[in-house]
Structures are given as structure tokens and as C-alpha cells.
Image (cartoon, rainbow, N blue to C red):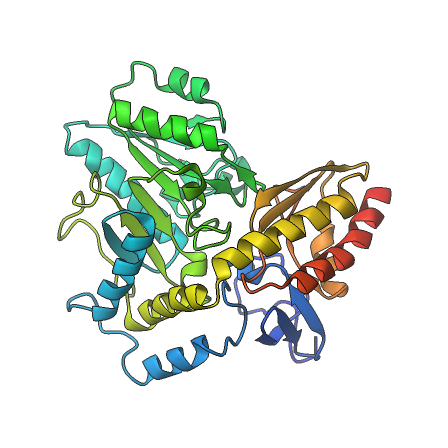
Length: 398
């Protein structure tokens, strides 16, 4: 970084342990910092930059939208909302959409839907089942639903009304809810992101759908990080051939333009009525255009298939290069959402990888997370492995 671009600013609140680089521009899966150094982007803005950087089809569309309308508010009909909602409904098999600005907002809205769903049935204190290691956001309610004591520390008292269970254990869920008439919903990520790239098993998802149907609960699936084609299907739960009742989305939906959505099926679609919920910026024309163009380009360019095939190639290459190393516990994930779990904390790899020209992150202290743009090529996947392998080997030798 240049002397004029300090690693930390005295005027920016100190909420991030930042890597000491400042990125200036990008092209495809590459970015360059203010000093001209090039990086291969295997983080994609934390699973956000679906189409990479400076996409030749996306940028002109957004430039055109800027000349039309950026924002009007939800006092008025927003035709682009109707168009994007239709695309999401068609691809999800669900029925209605509420638009907001982020994954946190989408998850907060989902929790409000669950509570009102319960109150509408006369349940005074509705409860929602959530999961160990889950991450749903940093508002007080989504923080309370999150299963990470470290991010909750210092923000009590937390919101009540959550029952926490382990992943992939249907009997534990049955025991935790036995005889409790206040349970209204089960809320989870198909593949936990911040919790360490932990997938729900297909058979568990199917058991859970059946249990929700039997007990009249809402099945609410947080697809904020694992949705929008990242696993090779539009939404990660579709690998289990199930349909949720509520599905929060964000991250990759706008390819970098902030946009969130809550997609609802018939059981939940009419829970919120005028006056129950709202947003100033949500569903603005610029964000809606970004979502529309993202889906259109993904389909034109075959990016779901690309995520599946290049992701499988990358995962196989990581297993080949790292899987036999003492200290590598597991390589897991689906499509272009991959975690490499080590047997020791590996946060130092984020900075070391940046020095080696590779952008990654580490979650759950010991899991390397790789969530690159869905335009990644097999050659770039091999480059990720080539740059990462010696860094992991060196760390494990320490």
C-alpha cells in the first residue's frame, strides 16, 4: 500500500482485522491493489461477486439503469421488483418475494415471519429451532439465532425464543422439541458458511421437511451464502429435492450490488401484511436490475454447470494436493463453496495467501474457505491449489 493509503484509518470504526492491502480494480477473477500487485480472487467478496469483476454484460446494464432510476421508495410500484420476483419464484418453486438489502435483513424478516406465523395461531411465545455453529447475522435477533458464543459475547441479553440443536441429528431435534407446543419453525443453512462450510446431509434435509410437515412448522432455509448457483443448483437445498417455506437470499444475488430477498412458499407468503414490515432502500431499481442481470447472465453463460464442474475439479485437486497431509482433517463442500479443515488454527493463512497473490478467508478458526466467482476456470482452480498448497504445508510444519 502507498503511504497515502494507511492500513487503518483514524476515522473508520475499528471493526475489522483487515489484511494490509487496498484493492483498486478487478477483471474476471483477478483484482489489483493500489500498488499494481495482482491477486487471484478465491473469496469473491465472501461469495458475493457471482460474475467476477467488471463483467462485460453486467456493467453496461448497471450503467444504463443509473441513467433511468436508482431509487424511488416502496410507496410506489417497482416493475423491476415484479420481474426479479418472478425469476426467483420460477427457479425456487415458491410463490412470493420480499426484497431488502442484505442477508442479515433477509434473515431478520424470516424470523419475524416465524413469530407472526405463531402469533396468528394463538401462540404467545413462538420458538424457533436453530443450529450449533450457525451464522445468520449480527443484528440482536439474528445474533441470537447464531451459534457462535464469540460473536455473541458482549451483546447480551440475547433475544429469547430459540432452541439450539446439533446438525444432521433428527433424533436430537425430536428430543429438543418433544411436547413443546410453542415451536413454529426450523431455521438453518443448507451449508453453514461462517460455521466452517458444514453441509446438511441430503437424508437429514428430507427427514426435516417431513417433520415440519407433520408438525405444522415452517421450514426456513438460509441460502444467503450457499444459494444463487454456488453449489451448481440455484439453491443448495435443491440437491435434496425439497422446497422450503421461507428462504432468505442475498450475497450473490446482485453480483456485488447490495440486495437481499425473502422468498416464501404458500404456507408463509401471506403472513406479513401492509404495516407489518418494510424497508426504505430494499427493492430499489438499481439492486433489482443487478439481480435480473445476474440471473440472466448466469443462464446465458451456463454458470450453474460451471460451478458444479469447476467446483468438482477444484475439490478433487485440493484433496489430491492436501488430503494426505498430516494435519488436514477434511476437504468438503459442494460446487464452488469449499472448506479445507486443518487440525490447528490457520487464520495466519489469510495474510500469507495475500502475500502470495491469493485471496481466501478462514472461518471457524481452522477452516480455509474458498468461494470464488462462479466464472472460475479449471486453469484458475489449479492456480488456487498451486498457490495455497505450499502455504498449508508450511503452516502445518510450524
